[in-house]
Length: 239
Image (tube, rainbow, N blue to C red; front, side, top):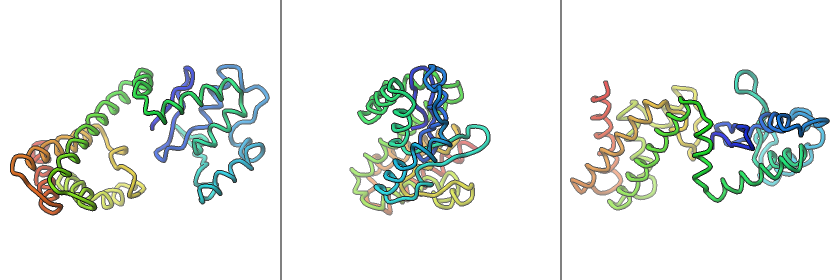
């Protein structure tokens, strides 16, 4: 989830899914709802302090893990979605209702919400989103093919790493280490990829799915080898 649209304002999320309270404060200000209210940095140390502690305790994490401040372009205060809802409620009942409605649509998987966000995005962001959606389609097709050909458990990760090694000469963990991207097992590397890299991965996965079906490749190791081989072919074409 890269951003939300609250009213007519875009509320960004960071790569960890934390919501920008700074954007919520700006949205409230644009609608004349923030008069006399604390900005996120002051709110978290005053009215929001106890609630933040409760959320952190429930999730068994530190408060600093679910509420962070960054400087520079795109910076601000970001927080867990439950804290974002609490901050919206503090700012105004109207904003709280708008935020609740958007989050309800997110939880329900309302795909029209993505279309609304795309309408407000820059051409560069729209291009990235289009390529990311194509990447998801290619990934879904490959995983279905892999499952039908006996891939199970860690075999899916091995196939992904086979693709990455064929295209980028490294596993997910190695690529993260080389580029300074935080490595997490459940976090997709593709969210940090350029449009060009997303296209390459999609092409490699589509080729691999066709080859696995065509030659009835079966099992974790054999399918991982085919993913690597297909990715190498795509890498050669793109050079």
